Length: 225
Image (cartoon, rainbow, N blue to C red; front, top):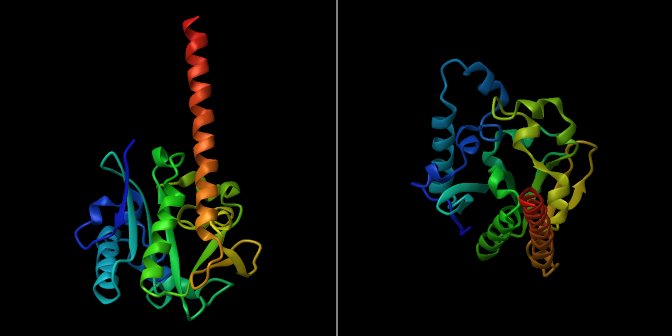
């Protein structure tokens, strides 16, 4: 497959994965989401929020495509424009950091190294812009959360937050510990090996994908025999 990663643009909203186009978990205050559920269009609200951030701050996302189709995205912005960023037990985000809110992959992209490549693109963009650090609220135990079984039906922490183990693999370190929602940080103003971390994670994912393809080929051969 041919993978391409590019910055999110004002006219690139349709390149986002379907869930990311409608998810306002980060972008709207939870109370406002609840009170406006019957008459608000989350896709309109999300596009309006992204447009506002891009006009005032610049590109706030990296978008991945596989063979021209949406494969995943990473969204990030100043924490002051993210209502939910104030509500975690490990808040607030450090004043010198940009907040990584979203890492969303389509199922077909999960074994193709898209996640690490998106992080690499985010880091590259922020380093060029002189940002000192990237922080994120990770989530632990999302796979064991019953709410995760409702994926696609509504926005929940299990659906819309980034797994803490993935962040650790990408070189993020815990700066505010919590059993469920640790706040994690990736320093961008020094050479701490983030590129090697990303490349190592990418190699592991590609190895898993290769083993999966080998299993498929072996099963196909057995079927022929």
